[in-house]
Length: 381
Image (cartoon, rainbow, N blue to C red; front, side, top):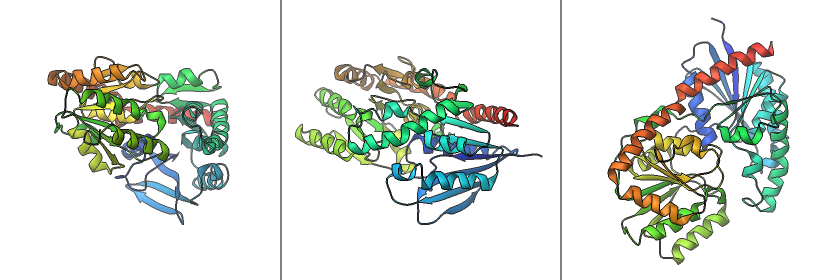
């Protein structure tokens, strides 16, 4: 059997039980599925803050963790990281390179091999000065945006995670653009519900883009009617000042008994939170997909989320959950309250959500990528 040698480059976890963000989750899901493909020789290349490079063979997949110093990424993204990743790609000598997010997509294109670039989020939107006004973020924008622009204008095959992203980048792209959603690991479909009454759950990084103050204010309205309501906020702190402002608001308004910041959790703790919640809330201001939404749907949980970006592609309004105008606190509270007061509605929406989530299963997404891999390799010959 002739195998296709594929190098998958992007953010990849050292510990599969501690995943940091949607890209790592997506990469892990793709790798887990491609382990089953006998005609693919898969290599994963990722940058990590380490003292030395680490190589692991994990169930037939070659994983290369390349060491980078503990410096801000904008200092290493187009210097050390670029040099190490491209050198490793050339050492492996693949038939195809698949780069996830703009910097790794840039490395894929610069390697000179047939390539596919996956755009998970739109850097221009995610680094909007209104969402990230600091001087440090301004420097990050200047380092990331040119790489994204290069990918959009030079990639022959681009995949994006939702039609929303296609709308944003389609006019800039010179090559083919395909929608391939983020994938959900099989284990999320296996979570059994152990619902705790009136438990709300948010999962994501704590930063202004996620709109957490809105759901905190919604809980403030709800607790006047349902004193048992509890919101668990799960995720690492991405913006310390923003986190501090949320904590200050909670304490100042005597909401500490209703709202708990859980921090970043490992995989098993995360699944327990999903199992126990009544409703999954996601009040983001900007989102290209929102893999946490799809994971919650796979668990059979109803959603209340902002009607923005790629979210309507993941959540079917009035079927798998409710979508509300971003920033409309009263509407957000009303929809949450409606679900809390109607167990049958939660059950029906949860069932519909689990069926919806099958569109994003590892198996389904790997099949889409496999077809594109064959096409890209043939086009590159």
